[in-house]
Image (cartoon, rainbow, N blue to C red; front, top):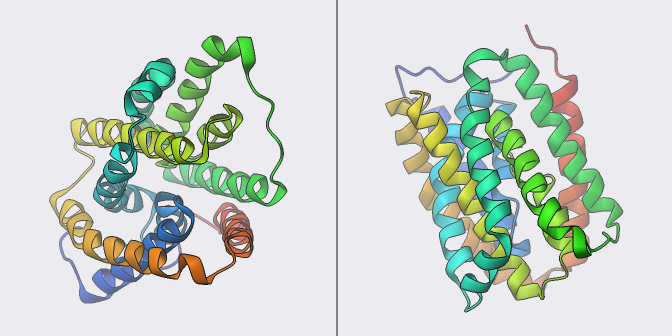
Length: 256
């Protein structure tokens, strides 16, 4: 992998500055549009530190920011009643699929991550109108949770196909944001459990994840403050176009 490869024996200043800058940017994106912190973090840090390090560093900032998003508002219990099979399948599949990081070549998993990020960008740019699941929701919910969990466990990315599915449910905007926060929170906890249980979060990377939290929170506040001054539509277009190009670049980058 080209770029800075993390040395688990040290936390050099260049790596700390890189992580802080990436998490500040990712937090700003989340502050503006309400999502994207894990995806931006994984896209940029995988291209520099490698997939395993990127996933570990992303965990704590994702956990803290999505706790607030999941518990803000009064619709949590109603969402849990509607989405419990989706969330349960997501959690179980994530824990099981995280074993892939110990048995599958990192180059394959990195390519899968690139494909997931590129697809996320392409779908965001296309903004298709997703059909409502209707009477198929009891079947589709655990199926979508299962697929999302497999992708999450193998790559750390939990936006596809979760976000399009949640959009298809026709939730009001505030409940949709809360549902995404709840989904990302469950995915993050399950991923942390899967990686931690397999000893895949070394102390140095855990420390780096703690260091990454303040820049992410500062970035979120910056994003919140500038949200009203930007065209959210144009910002989303730029974000999704960037994700599409980053995903393609991650897939195309030569690896040994």
